[in-house]
Length: 239
Image 1 (cartoon, rainbow, N blue to C red):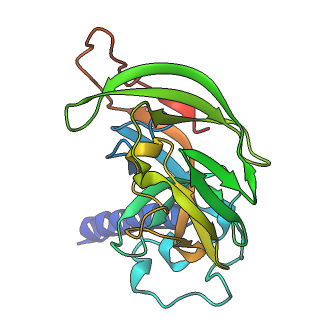
Image 2: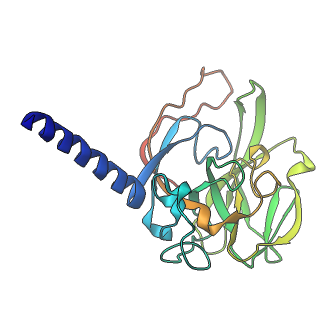
Image 3: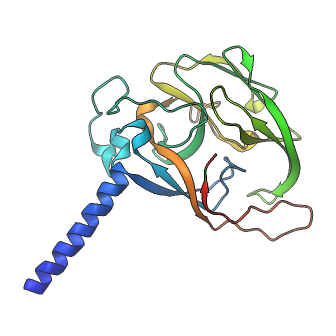
């Protein structure tokens, strides 16, 4: 009985430590889609730190069933992300965990015209950085152009625009409401993000953490001639 109690205490202590770390320090997430290529690839395992934005009920393991935390944003402390942060958040409609880039803060005026992002009446600078083709999840070969995008006050990051674009991703100017964020995927023509009613503006409360590092990757492809393969990565910073 004594050995059984010791074993049970050890298991309980280990579980408690894991729950505390996953609730207050960091958690890891698998990338299942192409929406953040080339920043994040299918198969990447990402570490998201919890403390940069404070904590909401969605930060905690099992916190979906807790009441909303007090305050305007439902976060303690009421911290805000910065433009350019790649974040993990709870989808306000489906309840799934999503990863996107924050591009619009409360009060920002956001528009997308011919694939170009406009913030507060100014076009966000883009510098062409490459051109390649890759095979998407549907098996189609997609030609894309890569650009370095520079959000105000943020380090440049890479986005992709398809060479044959659809106007469906463009958006008339909208103002980000208080307590909400505007999110975009870096693979702009293959991302279900805040441009669309299926997501819309994301409540600040729904933030889970900031994606800071790629721990490792199971990304792979057949290595076809002329097509880009997702790189294998380990312990890389998320830009």
